[in-house]
Amino acid sequence: MTSTQESIYSGLISDSFKLDGQVALVAGGYGGIGEALCLGLAQQGATVAIAGRSAEKSAALAGQLEASGFTAMGLSFDIKQPDQISSMVKQTVGESGRLDILVNCVGTHIEKPAEALTADDWDEVHDTNLRGAFLLSQAAGRQMIKQERGKQIHISSVRSLLGIRRGFAAYTSSKAGMNLLVKQLATEWAQYGINVNGIAPTFIRTELVRHYLEDEDFYNALVSRIPLTRVGEPFDIVGATVFLASPAADFITGQILFIDGGVTATQ
Image (cartoon, rainbow, N blue to C red; front, side):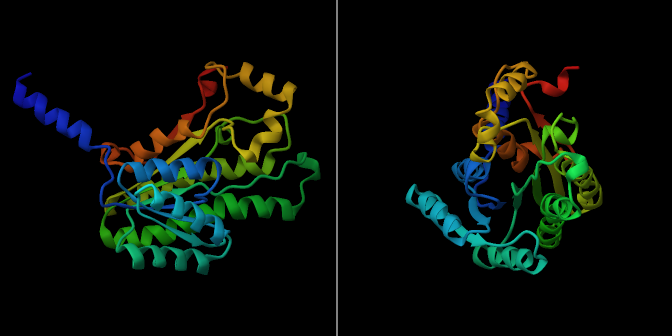
């Protein structure tokens, strides 16, 4: 390889992960995984719109990012309300001029044995995790279709592929549905230059799952199933998200990336 070729490839590699000038909307963007992703996207040059149910928490994180020299805004919405999702997307575009990246970190879980799960329990989980994922994608997709480009990333779960000996019937089925939704939207919207992918982690150390990880028996059984012998941390999700949002992943769509320490590689 000549020195000129080396220079060209070096530029391609270093530039392909940059997000300068792009606008990223992170739904579920404060706390846990979402906060780490907002910081990672901002560090790569993206303007970050942080959205969640609490306007105060969204604004607080946006303020922290701006104090660090990044560009951010805080928004509020209810993922079960289509009008609020639409308004949130319109506000993002109105203030930033465009929408290049959607990251969906919103999720909920109700743990009950399948025989005890109520219809309301089922609806609460599916309305948030699956119906909400579609409504977010649809609202962002309408803007991205106008732009003829965009990246969408949904946070799924290793439990979209694997069952668990606990009361996860509503959760696992909602995340499995999300995975196929990703593939369907990727197929439909490829003609508009929109990439849709998912990230499926194992247990990530956040406040949401703290009670599981503090259960010594559960924790030991969990880690014994993970070849890399640890649970995930929020930063483990950042690199994959930045990659899928970046030009480096322009030829990747309809994929579910399992960030699970090797769980799905085992029997």
